[in-house]
Length: 273
Ligand SMILES: NC(=O)C1=CN([C@@H]2O[C@H](COP(=O)(O)OP(=O)(O)OC[C@H]3O[C@@H](n4cnc5c(N)ncnc54)[C@H](O)[C@@H]3O)[C@@H](O)[C@H]2O)C=CC1
Ligand SMILES: O=C(O)[C@@H]1CCC=N1
Image (cartoon, rainbow, N blue to C red; front, side, top):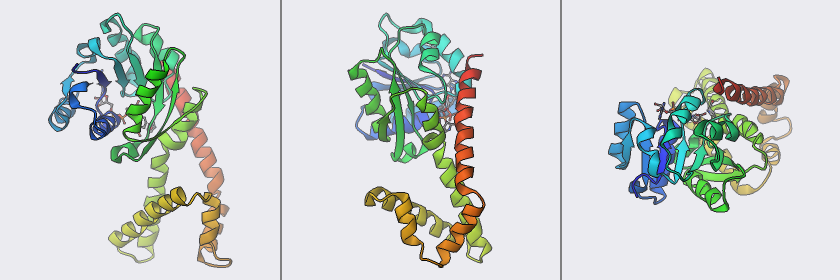
């Protein structure tokens, strides 16, 4: 049936998940997306060959899964708008919206929905994401599997036992790509300041990031062990790491990720207004 899995929001993340599902073998006929932005909507229809509409209200009636991929600030009005348009059965609701709780989503939609809340990240765009998932008590084992199948199409998945942990996940891996990109930017700039061309500085930085991530993933060694392997006593790496430590690198990350965690809670409260 057309539109069995209906996306509400076809922006960066919605689009990444749709592309991943199609690349993973889900037929486009099983997918549909509601996206009010005409250019984005037409691009989804053209590139993926799927059913699209400007309004979710026109798509959700026959859905078995509804995936919420709008910004937290609009979710309440979007969910309330959808509430009257579900058939008598309750589809599985999968939300990737930062901060907003399963209970709020369920209440805004009208109540008694199975809800799986997920936090993916932008490497989903290249199917290298990681998502953490949590299900409410109404989600069956089969529905948990359905949600996992969707997120697995764009990377790895982990389940967390406590919904509140999703705010920590958001702070660590949801926002995390930005921290690595910020480090890449800073390293590039430092290379240019030492006389490298911008192109060479970027290539050295990016491959160092990629190689380090692959090494850390494949070796099974802890990052601390791998860091020690690079750090010859009295050598260049030690000189650099001493500067980073003196600048409070670990404390800064602790504070930064703490700020993101608090912000997730604020987004949830603001979404209730
Ligand atoms: N960008 C990121 O790194 C991550 C974002 N998220 C969450 O994913 C959600 C979406 O984020 P992005 O894709 O980055 O934002 P985005 O702004 O690219 O996409 C949101 C889309 O929702 C559409 N939209 C607005 N009102 C709508 C409505 N009534 N019905 C259907 N669609 C509507 C917008 O036109 C837009 O295309 C957010 O809640 C965010 O918290 C989760 C993990 C990572
Ligand atoms: O910055 C944000 O609020 C979203 C959630 C995680 C990544 N981007």
